[in-house]
Image (tube, rainbow, N blue to C red; front, side, top):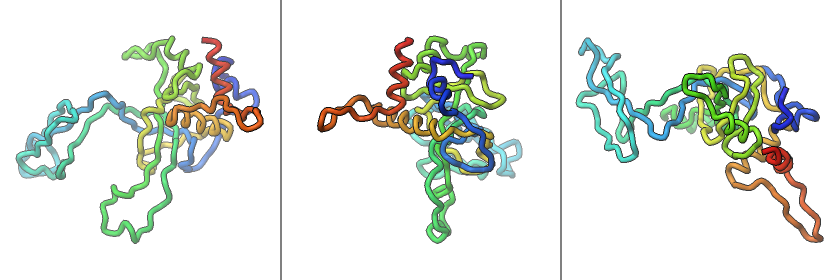
Length: 248
């Protein structure tokens, strides 16, 4: 049950927020699991040092992890390592990653004709989906969790890049926060994505579209006057947020 003072709590008396679904459909609004990196302010890079214990084989290497910033000069390994090839002007970044719930925001574009990809590197056109990760709200975690006051502000729809929710799946915390500022591509593959049996309802998707407009364009539809002095219809999210922020 959603609390009354939440976006979902206002929507749910008339329309469900989550609904059950099945199959392997990469549709927008599908709730999935994926290994997603935590995007730190400064990433690290993996630097090959030498081959493994047996210098005659090329499947193992010794490497070190170093801080990375945009001014880093790319230095190539002294000897080629087949286990970790390095191409010109490329490096390997290292992030902490965790298997997290995520929402498919965009299923990606249509399939590309095979005639246009023949004899080309697969990475150029491999299909992906865009997902937004959920972070568990658990003050009992080792890293301290989120500030309860911050969580309350997110629940009241104060920020465009954070959305509060209670996910309908096992393995997640009671409350979660979706970080829309960490939307990222994930391979459209069963090796990269695990489907849950839930997706957003049509009503929830309409509100999500308004929320994304708020994030991308900085507009929430507000009151505008048209010829004759009548008022344009406001988006639902505008009205809901107005009500919620009155509790803060």
